[in-house]
Length: 249
Image (cartoon, rainbow, N blue to C red; front, top):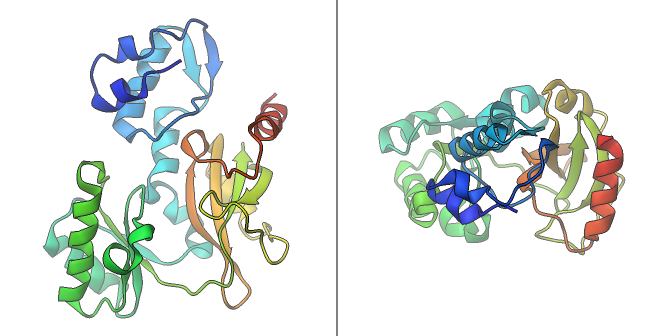
């Protein structure tokens, strides 16, 4: 119903949503949009009488790490970030987090599939090596770079990631992460420590990726807007839709 490429280019947004013919509340389900693109998208839909359940401010808080980090700081790796991509700001952030290994990303995405060259920093005290990783990250992200450089303290995990789906602060579905759809959690996921924190964010539809740390503690790896979060192939589309609709009613 929506021309995503036109939305992402920032062109004629009205033409991009021209096929949306009904009015009323709506949920977007599609590829990622930058926060500013989503804001224009929501505004244009509103002109047609369509109100997205996830408003522009909610989308940005879920889609960009600085929006959710403070609320989830007790259950996620310590993190610092810059505004922009300048080396001087990166070095200040590196010093703030302190020596030791870290994982690099921007506000919305990592390049974990380029782990050794553009994601993992073995020791933040080695400024030249750390900036080498950041430079490669920036090269790969190119025009998709969002916000600033984020450094997260490296933690050793004993499981693959699990993706959980939340509506209005309640977990409605637990499954594999899309990157490892055939892997299941080694033990039952303990949501008790994270549930009140996620509920406190006041976000209508999000996903939360968790992994079991080597010491047996579940940790939040990522929170994202549920509208643009991928589904593992091992969860049938109809199954996910039925669960989401049942909770939303």
